[in-house]
Length: 399
Ligand SMILES: CCCCC/C=C/CC(=O)SCCNC(=O)CCNC(=O)[C@H](O)C(C)(C)COP(=O)(O)OP(=O)(O)OC[C@H]1O[C@@H](n2cnc3c(N)ncnc32)[C@H](O)[C@@H]1OP(=O)(O)O
Image (cartoon, rainbow, N blue to C red; front, side):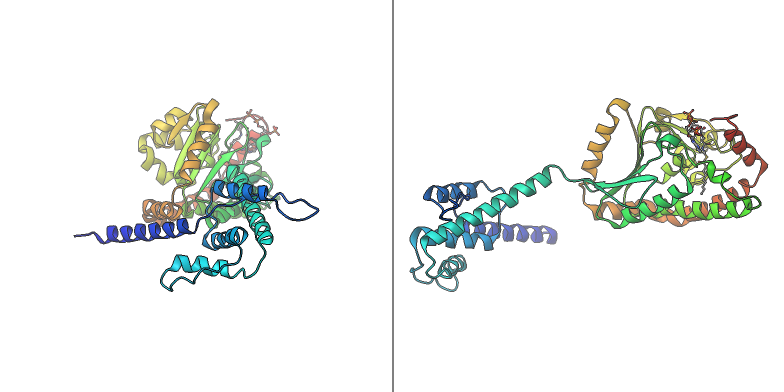
């Protein structure tokens, strides 16, 4: 007994074969344009050259154009159509006859010229589309200052771009990343990638975010910070397409915790992973208090999140936070070749599969995010946190 899906696939194949034969039946030779400006007439040589060029076209120009070419070729070589009209049921012959007959008394010279022009336009359309195919353009999205957002090969790349600050995330950058994720969720790209410009991936929260508050406004600053952080992390939780981190160098703080919300993490062997929350008088965010123990087990997560243990790329890979580590020398080349291949996979299939893998956890993750932000809001007002920040700016402490 035939399986319905197979029967459907076979009938589709048969239909495609029939269409292809029809196209073949209509196929005829063609040209390139070499008109002498004086006469605007094509020579027999140009007409023959056009026929050769038509054979070299890689793309099927479609039945309508092929019928036109057929008609012009017949008119140019035999003159007006005077053969008997084929029967109604002989579709292909009738379509060809109709096309030829529609040229009426067009002279053979004019038919040659039109044929030559048509082939010439097909040749130039194909060569310009080949240039595009050979090097798909990278389009840069407008309206960003702290990040660079580009789309190429079905990949939207969001690049932290404050290399002189080790890509620390300022308030403006949080907002721009939110906007970029919203754009990437809706645009035609298949996957999105987060990476850093320069030697660092990202040095985490910009500590200046804490120093910009007016005197007496620290509580407001903490409250607003928690609202922004919650919205920022929520965009990672809800991002509907595969999200890949390309960790090009050291990663600190929130840039590490977010890796648990990414679907794949590729790291250079120069990358390190550091979440010095207690050292800064703070507490975990980015859903790491829930996801890190799940990913690496409670014992290893404790070393990172409670005791500030910095991991090498190899260690992070062994603990499941990183998918794969590459030598820095070949990192960019290898990773982007791989991502290009991934991004050519069927987009909707990837999106629904991600939803299956992550969907059930979303509600939990939002609850964790909420709780982490509430705790952090209090932490930011603590002496422990304020002292750590003062100490950093007095150049007394660096990580
Ligand atoms: C909405 C709010 C949400 C809040 C979410 C909370 C998240 C928690 C975290 O992310 S915790 C992590 C916070 N990050 C840090 O504590 C890192 C602090 N930076 C450093 O320790 C060092 O700068 C370094 C180890 C990253 C690099 O050291 P190195 O000696 O190689 O380079 P410099 O220190 O000279 O750095 C060059 C200049 O960049 C400034 N800078 C680097 N990182 C940050 C940062 N995170 N915040 C603010 N400024 C940063 C650094 O001060 C130098 O500036 P200068 O040239 O003016 O001295």
